[in-house]
Length: 172
Image (cartoon, rainbow, N blue to C red; front, side, top):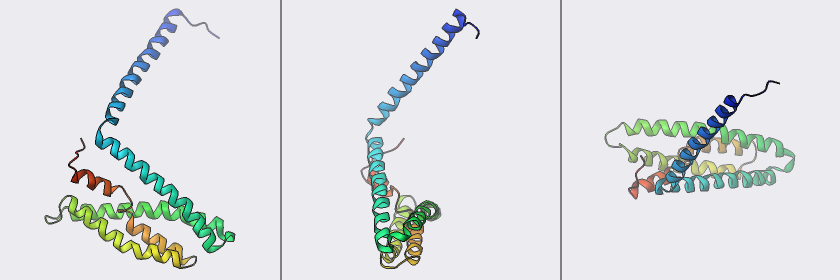
């Protein structure tokens, strides 16, 4: 093992000091950003959204285990995982695309297009969510997948975005 020279040692210490100073500056800037109302509200809304998602996932697994029987427990979890991952992404993509398409029209520009898609997707998805509770496997999962694909836009934090726009809180 080679012996480290004093110059290499001090160079290493300078690099560590520079890194710590840069990290401290970025941390201070980050903490200043957290004091902004819109950022704090977004963090709170994100925490509520994720808590609701975890709660739904936990309770949906218990419900479908009891509804379908514990012998199908493994397949229930697999179906729920696939539906949430694939259909949730598909729903968000479809909803975003429709919102962008309607947003290009003169009569539905801006937030109106997103509100129209939000309301229509929630109204369209509600019966499919209800049917997923009343039917047995595999039909309940088919209805759940359809509901997730059609309500992906409404499951996001759009309500919070509209609240910020109504309150006239602006993002940078």
